[in-house]
Image (cartoon, rainbow over all chains, first blue to last red; front, side):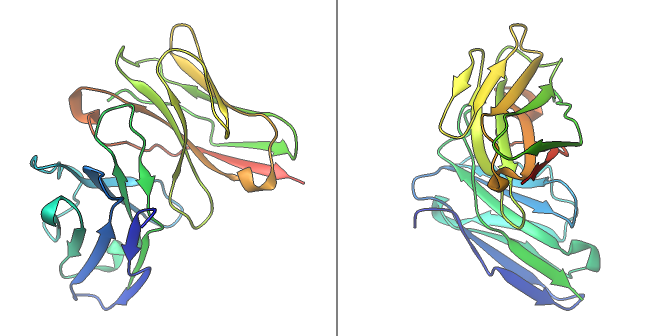
Amino acid sequence: GAGVSQSPSNKVTEKGKDVELRCDPISGHTALYWYRQSLGQGLEFLIYFQGNSAPDKSGLPSDRFSAERTGGSVSTLTIQRTQQEDSAVYLCASSLARQPNEKLFFGSGTQLSVL
Amino acid sequence: DAKTTQPNSMESNEEEPVHLPCNHSTISGTDYIHWYRQLPSQGPEYVIHGLTSNVNNRMASLAIAEDRKSSTLILHRATLRDAAVYYCILRGLGGTSYGKLTFGQGTILTVHP
């Protein structure tokens, strides 16, 4: 596809359930990022992947959150035992590389609602 | 990480120029200055970036102070579609800022018809 694709666009789940959010980056982009944005708040960095390097997980808020990137392409963000405070828009972005002059391309996000 | 400071909000009238300021007094020599904007209910989109020299593209211009401690994003003729949150971000080669972009609160731009 031409841009970063995220699915589902909306997810409603019950407290305590696990959810998986998917991100398809732009073909050829080696860097992939996950952010989340709570209602009315700024973007909070979660995790990023660069090629085959170990991911930077410094932004993950708890051990209930994990992410993987298979084959250097598609990424899945998993939230276990969801809590109401996990409700937010989860945004994925990719870039050609992680060099400081590279720009990020964002998807439209997944709106997660935990009831 | 080097931080940026932006006004919380600004207002403009349609078809007038808009100057969005950003202070980054602790910028390092290898930090690029990036601007992104986020329209309502959308993910952020890239606007422009620069290192030392002023930059122009189809969306905007970026004016960088000679000492690089501040910059200004210039929208030459604001339209209603430019109403968004504008983020000024530093992206460098080293330290914890390497790789990821750290977003602040940004400037909410309101454009009046």
